[in-house]
Amino acid sequence: MCGICGVLNIHSSKPVEHHELRGMADTMLHRGPDDYGTYISPNRKAGFGFRRLSIVDLSGGHQPMSNEDGTVWIIFNGEIYNHTDLRRELEQSGHRYFTRSDTESIIHAYEQWGEKCVEKLRGMFAFAIWDEKKGKLFLARDRIGIKPLYYTEHDGYFIFASEIKAILAWQGLRREVDMEALYTYLTLLVTPSPLTMFRGIYKIPPGHLLSINGEGAKKIERYWDPVFVDRGLEMTPENEIVERLRDLLTESIRLRLMSDVPLGVFLSGGVDSTLNVALMSKMIDRPVDTFSVAIKDDAISNELNHAGQVAQFFHTNHHEIVITHEDFIKFMPDMVHYQDEPLSDPVCVPLYHVSRLARENGTVVILVGEGSDELFAGYRGYALMLNFFIKYFRPYTILPSWVKSLAAGIGEKTFGPLKADFLRRAAEGEPFFWGGGIAFTELEKRKLLPGIKQHDVTIDVVKGWYDHYQEIYPDAHELDRMIYIELQHRLPELLLMRADKMTMAASVEARVPYLDHELVRFALSIPASLKIRNGQTKTILKKAARGIIPDYVIDRPKGGFCGSARNMVNGKIVDFAQHIISGSKWMKDLFDMNVVKEMFDHQRSGTADCGMKIWLLLNLVLWHNHWIEDRTIDVHR
Image (cartoon, one colour):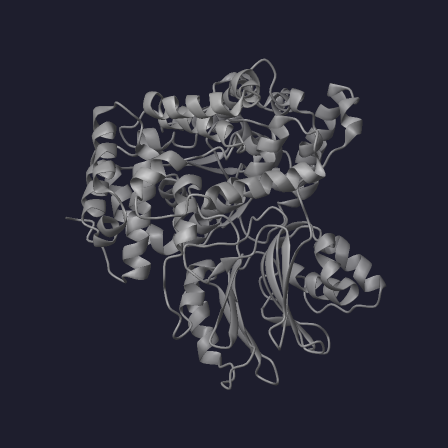
């Protein structure tokens, strides 16, 4: 795992310099403490910077790396799990290798197949290739979006990096808030691709390529889309689907054991992490290193007993850490630095601390369970939303327009914010499901930001996802649509982004077995009726887990990682949040602070759960203080 960055001089009179690349790369020291490198093309139009966390071929994987004659150069962040198979194929075609690293297979794959090389790669990746002969820069982000990649254009340069902070190190780059991104963030918890919270800085969406030549002609295109419909599975016996699912997950775990450094597992004691432990324990000749975290005096967050049971059952080498609310507050200034842009999930804090625990115990590579709940419908909210859609929302949409409009007006004054917004969506012909994590509804934002006229921004983003899916798969089950929406935004830009940013903050690499693209392809083809049955979630994966992990793990009610914002954002954290938010002049100028105060009153009294909304605003203000105003918050006040 690494940090990559680089520039392409499009029409500046100033050539690329090594010290500029070094300055960018050194902002990402946490991503790559083991090695450093730069490359500048002979004409000094293109340059790469690199920081390395050594995982595979420790002595021979130095980057930037070139092909045999130095006409193709690469910097690469991620892992290619099928690189040895690719190597055999490419060597048979005449390519010569000089290292054992997976990086070199990407170079030769590009030489062999051009931009279509990404279709051959099995893994997680963000990479940049400079083709000297063609004078072209080529960037790619992996299919699911496990690895981030950002870019901007400034003063005659095209600039890119694994993290926004490296781009911001470029001299003269202005830092401004993108108000369109801010408005969507307030609902969707993180800015959707290609936007970021910084105006003019963008992220390459999952499954997309970007190429740009020396004159600045740029092309962005999708090479992979998570829409797979294997009609044959509808007629396939369930036991055959279960066996195929087991085989694919086992293969995915096996591939992700590729490492020259110690590996471990983050263990909550739930189905996903326990399956990781169970399958991994069969493939290695030592106890699996497992790591768990809890929050002191917070019973909802504490799954240490469950994790301990699993650790004992599989005889793992288990490690635990308990953090306090003081640890939360102390870490927040560093958190917004590592995040780059706000990621509104308090799980970032325990995730960082358990990552640091792993690193301190010598474990550099960690298997995590992200993606399972999205692919196999594991959240209870999915079942509730699906039931609500079928029984109420869909029938309601066929009523006369005047009835829907009247009901929406009554609902705004009578119901809670989410139900009221469902009525508004139905009345205005908008999609039902916007994502598994929603903070402020459109109705709430109109009160929260009375001076901002961005009311259609978030709606247009969500509708765009639905329209694209509808065009490809018009008769899809509603659950399949919901899962697709999650794979378009919440999974890559929030859940996977938090995993990347917080593990890399501790110089740890996270691997995601449930998101092997072959497994994803199969999972998305499984009929919805096998994922949620009689209101029970994750049915098919639990069937696949029977006999591999203990029944008491499978039958235990699902709990979120350390609970949720409902339990994490309380007590001292609420006090700290109100102090920071109420002290922000930027917030006072933009937001209705009376509405904000009501949120704190509700959270303290327990009359409404405003934990996520408070965390979202706290994260936003801390980000603005750090990145826009360039000032430090005293967390000890």
